[in-house]
Amino acid sequence: MTHREAKVLRHLGQCRTLALGGHRDVCDGCGHERISYNSCRDRHCPKCQGTERAKWLDRRIEHVLPIPYFHAVFTLPATLHGLVFANRKALYALLFEASAGALQQLARDERRLGAEVGITAVLHTWGQKLLFHPHVHCVVTGGGLSKDGDRWVRARENHLLPVKPLSRLFRGKFLAGLQDLRRAGELDLPGKLDALRDDSVWAAFRHQLYGAEWVVYCKPPFGGPEKVFAYLGRYTHRVAISNQRILGIADGRVTFAYRDYADGNRKKSLTVPGVEFLRRFLLHVLPRGFVRLRHYGLHASSNVGTKLVQARAILDAGTPEPEGSGALVVAAGSPGRGSAHVPANEPWWATVLRHSGVDVLSCPRCKTGRMVRREILAWGPPARSPPEAS
Image (cartoon, rainbow, N blue to C red; front, side, top):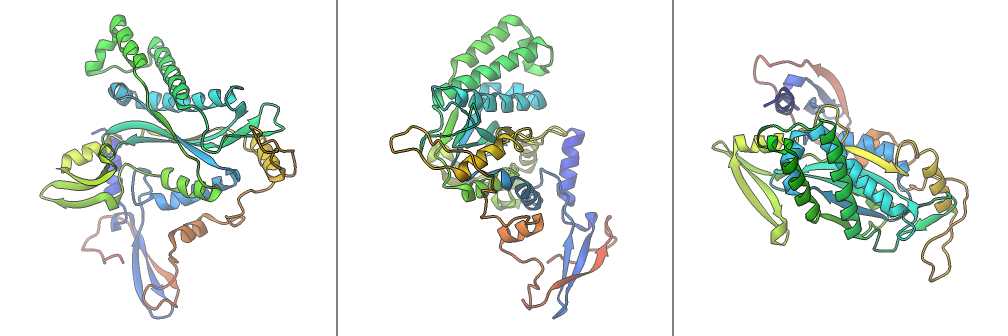
């Protein structure tokens, strides 16, 4: 293991134990006590993403427009997996740039949409069996702002962009970027990859990749902003495996659930040695400081205060064209939030409570009292068995 991988496992092992400290809450009605231990807050931890997800959604919800959104997925072929794993930071970034660039370029084409779309992209590196499977999920606005910025151009009801041209454009952008990295000497080629230093071997490798069809698909649009909000909450802070998927740990082996997409999406289970389970999990530790969630087009930070505001103003004041028109053209008006389903200025902790459906301040025993913090538990290795956490 690398130092970083060992650090991630140490964090996960200490999460919500006395090693990280905690606090004791007491009900002001019935006197019921509850021990809670602190979280590790590591972004690879399956137990620590709920609060971070709520904070992120609280910051981003105002950027969701009152329109349908599409879900596009860009997947790298298995032939590239070894090279990508050896150059994760550079090639994960290239995966983002190629997928978002392909979406933006095709959307701007006057023969397609002829508009600038908004994109929120998140990197996932795992498949259902925890093997290395890098791909990017993109949530894309169902339309875009016209080039002159005066109109909103709506995508067709169940079609955003043609998949085959999108796939080939994505392939071309990624392989062009890969060639630039090799020419600049920025690719690490350890072990068996060392053969790619030879120009003829590299040329054959690129020819093979250009000859393959790269997997890109686009799902039908979401029903509205509320569903976009719920979807983002599921995908943005997901880790390689959740605790719910781990079915059992016994005799040095781990059994976990997965979906077999090749067999009608059936639920199945897989048992592997514990060391192999950890090896697969560690395949998905991100490079230090790498940002796995990025925004492009109307959602880019440089545009949220300008183009996105203009788009919302147009949509809030807009009226559709007569029947038969190919696009929705609306006139500019005053800006609005466009997300009335979320209370204005709601703090992140309120979002957590609202989406979890649980009031963590209520006493779980008497249901009427409120839990009041009475003691802070010092962190560090316990001298004796710690009290059980409720």
